[in-house]
Length: 86
Image 1 (cartoon, rainbow, N blue to C red):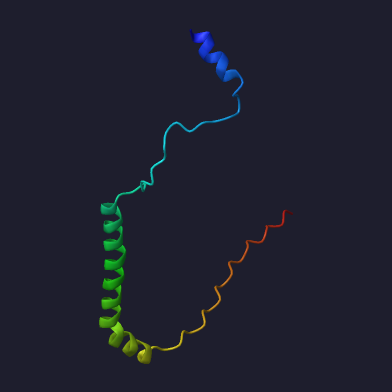
Image 2: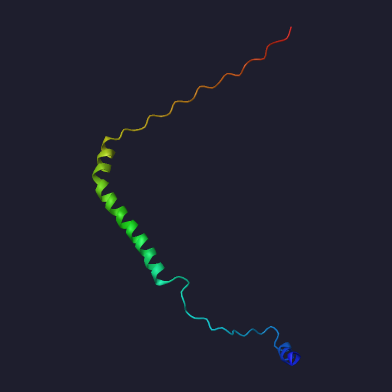
C-alpha cells in the first residue's frame, strides 16, 4: 500500500540519497572547445602578423610625430546685465 511505502520514508527525513550517478561529462563538447581554441589562437596569430607588418610604419610615424599644442581656454560668455527700471 501507499501508506506503508511513505511511512518508511518518515524516519529518513533530511537524508538525501542520490539516485542518479553523476557522470564526468563536460558541459561543452570537444567540438566546441576546438572551435573556441581556433578562434582565440587564430585571432592572436592574425594580430601578431598585422603588428609585424605595421611595425615599420609605426616607427616612422613616431619619428615624425610632433608634440601637441596646449589647448586654448574657451572665451566665457558674458551674462546680460539686467536693465535698471526708472
